[in-house]
Amino acid sequence: MKNWRIFIFIGIAVLLNSCIIKSIQPFYTAESLSYNAELLGNWTDNKKGQWKVESLKSKFEEDRKEGVAISEYQIKTFNKYKDGYYIEYIKDRKSAGFIAMPFKIDTQYFLDFIPLEYEAEDLNRIAAQHLVNAHSVAKLDIDKGTNISFNWLDEDNVKDLINAEKLRIKHETIGIQEDILLTASSSELYAFLKKYQKADIENKWKNSESLQLTKSNAKP
Image (cartoon, rainbow, N blue to C red; front, top):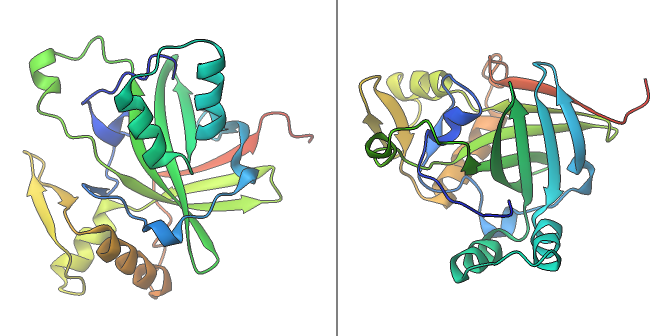
């Protein structure tokens, strides 16, 4: 994160190349934020991806101590997300950086992912200017601090609810593939997630975007 370069790029598709729901606004509210130190550390997922999770505060201080130039924009970004994590994800020798904001609905943890850095040198400049930096949300489950899982909210599940008129939420259908982009406020998104979490929907968190992570230094 030393250069803190902010890209307009492929959004969360940097991380996953299929249908997770995306939103213009965060999925959390300020009062729902809840930090959990058990997420910190180095992790390996079941698809051979590597994850490094750090406190954004510690990452910011580390850069300062190393004499990295920090702009006013970067300070503003830090102040907005200082209660979150900086996550570096490496897969197939390509890395991406994310801010992840932890929040709770009742006793369940969630993460709001925000793309921050990406190796975009091969991305056409004009094409890059058409892309939107969006939020996604994943349910976070922690097992004794050595195993965790990320289960992203799947676009197909949301689309089915909208088409069946079981969900009314502000959204737009965008692009050639007619992807759904949620445009509701954070309070509306949080309220939707709370109802969704309680709803009797089969396999609502089980999809291709589920990742199981094991701590890299965990003993067998």
